[in-house]
Amino acid sequence: MLRGQPVTAVIPVRGGSKGIPGKNLYRLGRDTLLERTIKIAKMCPYVDRVLVTTDSPEMYDIAQRYDAAAPTLRPAELASDSAKTVDVVLNLIETVPIGTGWVLLLQVTSPLRTLGDLTAFCETFENGPADAEAAVSLVHFDSPHPDKIQKIEDGLVKSYLGKESMVARQSLPTVYALNGAFYITHRDTLVTRCTFLPPRTLPFVMPEERSVNLDTMADVYVLEAMSERGVYKVEEYDL
Image (cartoon, rainbow, N blue to C red; front, side):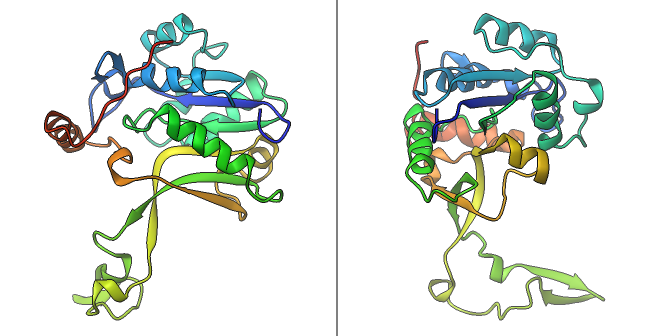
């Protein structure tokens, strides 16, 4: 529980993946990405319930083995490339149903986050300002810094943000990117605002080496190479 209310961890996975075929069942160490995510959710002391929402019978069977499956397979219209994650979660809130408490979103494409990261994330939210509506994980980002990004307009190069781009990197403000590892907000906030990023969202900054996010095969190749070199560490969990 967090702030006296139950926490439901939602893990959305679907069968079709164009960037990385079979992505959610990619094996890292002993477990698939799906199994790794289920395990850290199940082992986190703040999480009360874990629900995997999927259109894939194979992944549904895996979730059932861990007592983490949603009541039914996800509707086909919520398993397309264009389906929004928040709509998938809202469907789950309605159909399970999830009547109260916090909704923790865990995407399986963050394979190097750890149980310790999840526990610390929850503790950050638990101990944060009482009026905070949500929390999200971030990673420091400066390659390239947003102030240096350009666009082409009418055949000419223009600053995307309208900023002076030819300045020393050290003089630019520190910025962060969503790393996709953790999102949490209240069930009622999701229903009324349809977002995991309401105005009063707390930051949880993670190190770059545990903020890897798998979107393309290039990401997989980098992950495998860096793991072989010992730069990236893979934690194993026994549930």
